[in-house]
Length: 301
Ligand SMILES: O=P(O)(O)OC[C@H]1O[C@H](O)[C@H](O)[C@@H](O)[C@@H]1O
Image 1 (cartoon, rainbow, N blue to C red):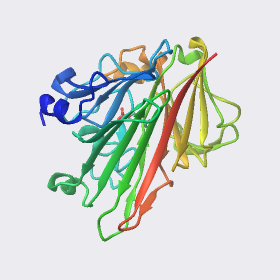
Image 2: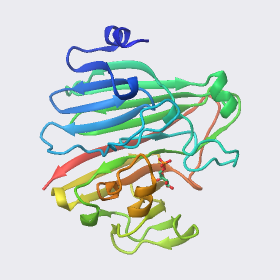
Image 3: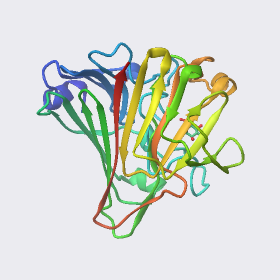
Image 4: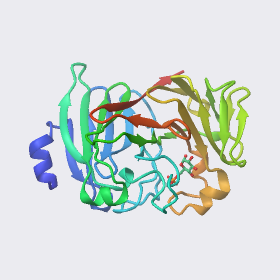
């Protein structure tokens, strides 16, 4: 569907407007009495979300991000699916699965009873996806733009075999200064330290970032808080369906090496990802579905 057809079928006045975005990709601009947001249909990716009274966006979006078919957009909320991290079968398929590198379909747009906006994107298996991952699937991403950003990723298995996935909302949160940022509610939690030979460790105190951090926290709480002290705000993450959470910051060296990040971008974001990762695999029986939920709320001091 082209932009005009999308607007005709799914546009809602000035609240939901489809426009050609960077790299010619179709974007959805959302503006309601609670918040503004930007979504890329490519990747099914929320790129920006700002509640009306918030000064700064919830999300970090790299100024050097690629907007190209086949490449992931650096920032916002990439969807890692049907696997998180490197190819689990070591076949050289792309890291974090294929849905962050594909065009999604628009399924539905509506206004919620609280005057928020609901956008539903989706995807199903095709000959091409089956050549990468031989499974039938019906995937749905329900995005609600209101005073909070709510994301629900529903995987339905229409096939005749059990379907096993790992996945993530790989969210890049925008912070004022990483050196004045910490994450609480992970105290006394076991984690796999991907930076130190996948050693299992115990988190002592709040998570602070003073070097490269890439950790998979296990048996996590359903409430995590990012303290963005420089901006005098907290970001409250409430999740369902996950037993793991990933905390990632590349720090200086990797930030310089990544072509789609500015050298000092590591100071401006932290990824706190709602995941089913490592041993937190999801097995979906034929005919059933699984729902992963993340809700993000900004609390200003
Ligand atoms: O650059 P990307 O492919 O988006 O991956 C960025 C990062 O994602 C996750 O947080 C992983 O735990 C990291 O190991 C990885 O480096």
